[in-house]
Length: 314
Image 1 (cartoon, rainbow, N blue to C red):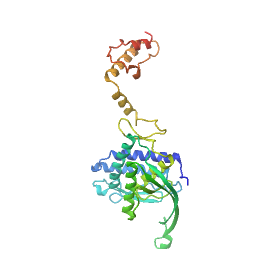
Image 2: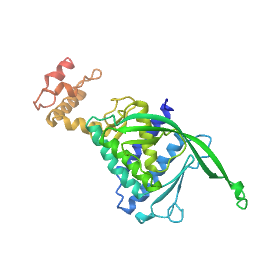
Image 3: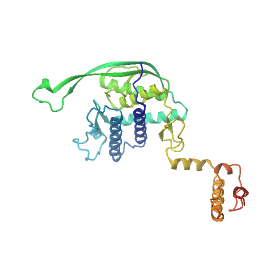
Image 4: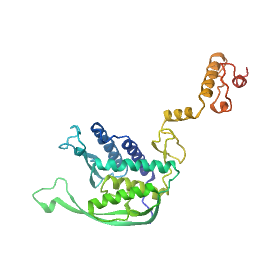
């Protein structure tokens, strides 16, 4: 059976997940001031996922926060006050501080796998459609007529069964296994685990949503090699083509390249290029490039470098 796929939407959803991972990894959840930031981070993620994965025919309820009498403006002052009530497609689930605490080490584990060159984390063993029947409350129904307040809804979920083959792969499935057991007391195998595809309608928790996104993406592409780490700050990045990005931004690229170059070479090259800019009046000067100075260890005054003179025919 083929996995239902919209590559563009799924790629955008994984980019949102990477942003969530990066933001969560920097949160100090023991600092009450950081909890307000966590609210914004999770709202951006759930709202973005709804725009890209959830059915466009359903009303856009986005994220509803449940903090101190459901008033978002009230400051979160204690960890036990942190609770988000998320409405995503037909799913309704809560996110609390424990979910963030579970995800932080998972992000570190993913970075370690990437640094070690591991991009294949799962082997799909089965794909099947599963029928789900649930009862939903109708909007605007008369509360005095119970039989008109609810209706039975039948939907089908595409379920992927995978075998984890890396530490990160196992940790994600174990998290979902523990989350499922805490809610339903149903024991699942943490190695061979059913994960609902992200193209269906219902998720039971934030962990379930994260697992379904990553496992679906992995099953379709065969790996996670589009997810990489910045060489300088180790922040997670998404590559539109595998291997096309090594840095999260220009600042990190410049810092990394400067750190790899001999400071004497860099200062000397800049000095020669500044001299050329000031002394060559006819047209644009030909500057020295980083690779042209790698075999030179001489620190020269401006204008004393023979290479820049030859490049500019002086």
